[in-house]
Amino acid sequence: MRRLACYLIVGLYYGWFVLTASSNRPVEAVSRYVPGWLATLIWGCWLLLIPIGLGPLDVPKYLRDSLEVLFLLTCLLLPVAVRLHLVATLFISALGCVELLWLIPRWKARWKREHGSA
Image 1 (cartoon, rainbow, N blue to C red):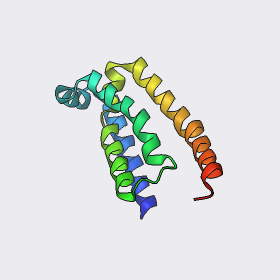
Image 2: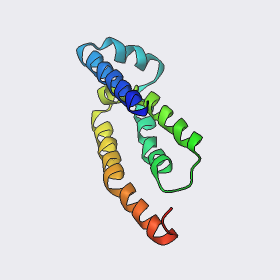
Image 3: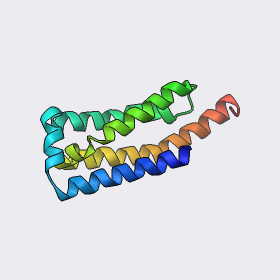
Image 4: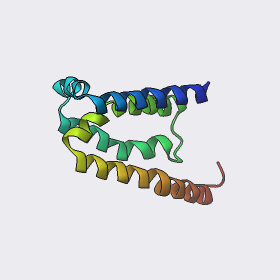
């Protein structure tokens, strides 16, 4: 079930980005309600929220699930942030990749060493 949900989410986002690449209308419609600077700020907040949701801390499952759903919803703002603040959004995305691929695995390994295998 979880794998099917992942495929569905990836497909929906791929469709959203293809739709926004072919037309400015979806981005303009969303940016009427959410300004570009706010979309970029929300995207940047995930640099703090991702370690909470994916880190080794004992965060309840319902909170982790809530953060995942919130992340998926805020990813809909990514085309707005990219169109209006490209450099800042790319920088935030690069920092997020470094965090996900390098920082969090090291943090988890260190946590396990110091607090026993949990």
